[in-house]
Image (cartoon, rainbow, N blue to C red):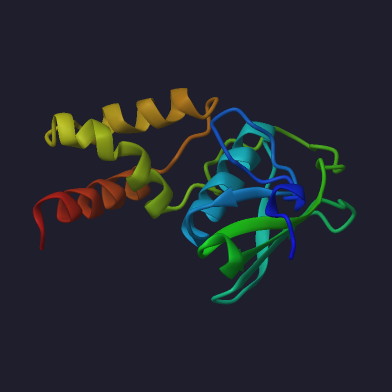
Length: 162
């Protein structure tokens, strides 16, 4: 008979705002993994791409071919379906050529999840204020008016139904 108190459990932790990526981080779902990848890329002023995505795995790498940054996250059935970072090669090794603050990494769904709380408080908040809120939160990364407008519409639909 095996004594369960001596079984070693590998490092497992959930990501919190301000943390760096590392092997062993767990997430509730694949959308949360993607969200954290975007936040970390925005904080480091880098761009990445999803190189492969299935229902059970997600692979991301830097858009710069010379950079070694790479992340692999998989769903872990033994952790009740949580997603875990199983491979992390980082940090970014590419040299930033210039400031990339065009908001290209911020998708409409990413912005929608960020403005949800603000719109729950006041759903008439102008897009101009939402854009400035996003810009201040993500170190001057500018999202387009269209993306914020689309995100606001999606969020309001989610709040009040179709």
